[in-house]
Image (spheres, rainbow, N blue to C red):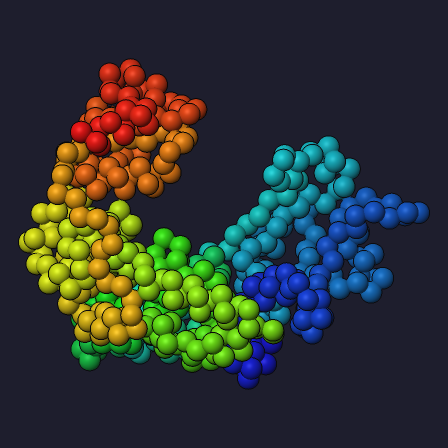
Length: 483
């Protein structure tokens, strides 16, 4: 199956279990029919005109009828025979034509089985013995780094091919920098590997006594191996990440976020359409969204003219979005919608935000050192500077559209919103509070100054009353912001 998939440039199955499960879950039964599936029948569920006393007898009968029955079945009469059978199966598991990770001991007498019964989750007449994972030694030929969709750079072990638990292993993940240091791995080492749960290969240790002196220490890259942007590891995190917004490895994920409802809100540009645009090389970076032609989009769907018209209109509308949406769309690490609004209100234009220093950013309320560092690193990247330039050329708005308010009458005040508001949506009320310097919180505490309560306000209102916090109706709120 994998040979055929390789020829068709399709993703390979990791193991027989995944291949079988994936084949049975196909919605199109024709695909399932083409897969070389097989099955072992292991139980007689119902039969008329014949009775059985034991499970072993059932299996023998099924085999005589021509059913495919597991050849590995051993009848035992005491604990010693059971132990011997388990050891025998374990010794011969490599010779089997199918993979196993254990053996099941069952009570053979069917009458006794019925007496023992079962719990909601498992029978009382059977128990599984799990074999310890098979371990093999091989050479760690190299360590290469791969970049995932989120920008995480993962080290991969390139191994001298070795057969473990029924499959040949030539590479496996090394997770992160800390894992490599913890194991003390060096390129050229003889390492011990096993399959976790008999499925996922993993490096479990290094044979330091077998070192020759030619081994090479490994260091995580300082730049992304795909796009060359700076690779950073933030304090308290194990992962090293690519910071480039136009990194090809991250592009699909970045595009999905850029067009999402909370970001640029480009209706109609979902994951499926983005995938098709990338496959056809109609877009190769984020700015290319704004150069899409009507005929390119129409070609994606049968009778796609109406779809193309709607999507072009949605793309054009997104050019007029407020600055905070663009900041959100960039997907800067640690920066969400709330922080994007704060930055847009403070700096008013993308250029001023790009020029802001780390010190200045870190002193902003609700920003702080970690977020400030992330913002600074993002806007220093050549890829970011290039993207902003191209977005401007495409006519995308890069300025705050919100009326600038000098009056910060709510500065230092914390609001909690609860219940159904009539005049405002929650988002609108939050925007007004933040515009006048206040902030909102999701929970009531002693630090809460006001609770804006609408219809059907629940536990938050009760807690605010018990703490003596000022409760505002919508009319009260209007009066407060007019003062």
